[in-house]
Image 1 (tube, helix red, strand yellow):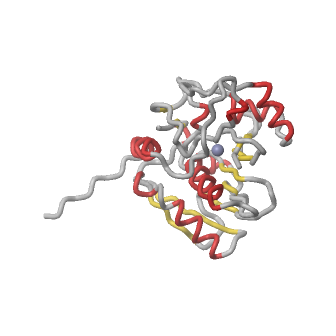
Image 2: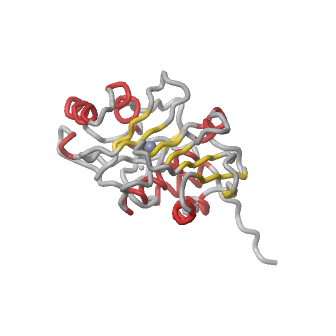
Image 3: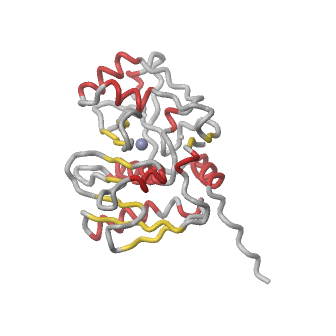
Length: 238
Ligand SMILES: [Zn+2]
């Protein structure tokens, strides 16, 4: 099972990244980020989880915390639903979504900034989705839209495949085909192992080269995150 990203076209405001599960595979620094959406250095992010069981909360928290050692941000999980990052877990088939970093401030406080679809998901899909969506929440963009990506999309096949999933052409372009502008993003080397990359079905490319679904933070993801929010050095024991 692979994940095709489907976002609201840029013209829609505010963009809410929506990941969709397609019948085919589509699909990181190493990373790419939009600097205007990064959180302040050393910020404490209050994180709310709701519309899910306590077990699901623990499962998601455990995976979110994997980003922690690679940032100087503090992840503070709170019991009320009014956090800086508000994660809903309802299983209504609406897919996985997150705003990018501080875009969360533009959403009404009573609305989630991230959604994790907990219904009928394999452990592999959840492992990808939770890490991936929280990467968006920290300010990361899609690696497959990196200016140096090497994917040779068969655009007609891709558009046909996404149309079958109910994703229109504008969304497919916004979430998959559009390549980020070098002048408005921060990026390092293109990394197909990034958690921010979608899987790519080889049948949707002109060179029959696909990309497997990443389920772990790559070394590039860790290094890129550390460059965005450099962890403070530990004070040597005196
Ligand atoms: Zn995404």
